[in-house]
Amino acid sequence: MTTLLSFGHGFSARALSRILPSDWTVYGTTRTEEKAAVLRAQGIKPVIWPGETLDTALREATHLLISAGPSEQGDPVLNSLKDEITTLAPRLKWAGYLSTTGVYGDHRGDWVDENTALTPATKRGQLRVTAEAEWQSIPNLPLHIFRLAGIYGPGRGPFAKVRNRTARRIIKQGQVFSRIHVEDIAQVLWASITRPNVGAVYNLCDNDPAPPEDVIEYAAQLLGAPVPPAIDYETAEMTPMARSFYAESKKVSNERIKTELGVELKYPDYKTGLQALLKLEQDSVERPL
Image: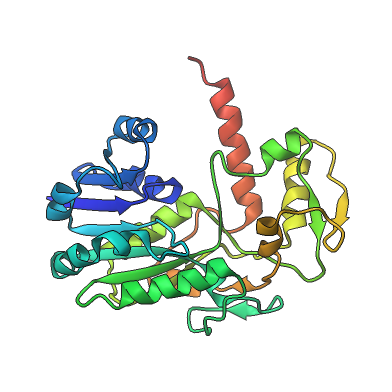
């Protein structure tokens, strides 16, 4: 039996579970009964956690995926289950930790790769560096770390904001972000599962780091909608969380997933990704009940 135990079975983890072979069993943790019902309908064995016991899932697990992010109190999985994970580690075939490219900090638009020093500029990035190190410290854990750029996919794109006129083109000179379509996250994870390299770190992003305002403009063009006006970053009204995203500017290299894992991205840039998202929306509207 091959069993994945997925902590924080959210957007990226669900994308992976959709492409796993049919003979896999997937346990996914979630926080509410409402979300558990959704997972159950997708063929996942949900565990409301914290709350319900994970004894069966831990006993059966051959693969481990950690999507749950750290807080000021530390990594939520290791805070509660470090001893159990340590006991489980030698029996696992693969473990994956989903981190963020925010661990690299600000590089003023220059390139970074997996060997770049970790100098996070935000508290979120600092917490991720600490969490990565804690997972790496577990003996005999077949750990792989995946540093994700900005995630988009079905239901998570700029179209809704463009349509309702809430999208903003905030301009900060030299600002670039990297992105990754959720289906490409899934295929990278599967490639790693089938070709494990314990201790490896991978950047997950597409080939085309781009200014955020370019993405909004292209989304508007696809919809035939007015392009939102440009707003200067210095004078823009933004939440502290939103502003923190602009504290870092870098281009993230994805060469390792292509050369080591043989991944060919389905959506190598934001334009192909947005085109596919729009087609998916249109097809779902046109599909008869």
